Length: 147
Image 1: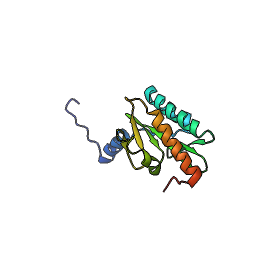
Image 2: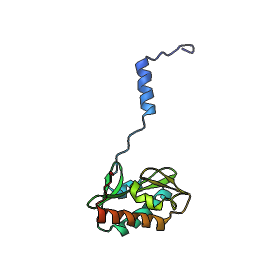
Image 3: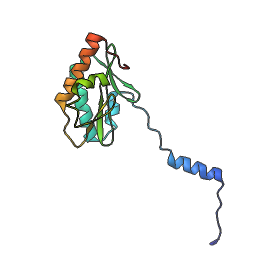
Image 4: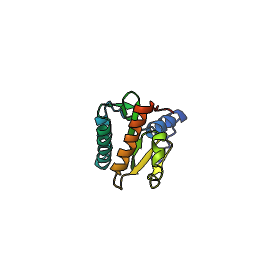
């Protein structure tokens, strides 16, 4: 048997590839606490800090998981935040970011998001200002999540 060859059918090879290439699905978190607890300690600390700021500004907001990430809602969706391998993201909507464009120049931003690297201190004051602005826009002008 030393020189015997094993031939695998293409369907067996496909099944092996699919099983190796497809990661096991992790259950979606059912709460914000569960979401945060799924991250390494450094990320958890940043997420908890963002969460605390947002809950101080919107104490009556309801925390829920939407799109797999934490969201705070009032009469509208107010904010979202999330964790990644090298950063955390705060999502207050694009219009809420506009007045802070200069302050945000040292961070990576997207249409509606700000990324804060894990290896840097969180700009708590800036996050607070942006969150307050977003709350004011929702309360006074009924600012939408999708604009």
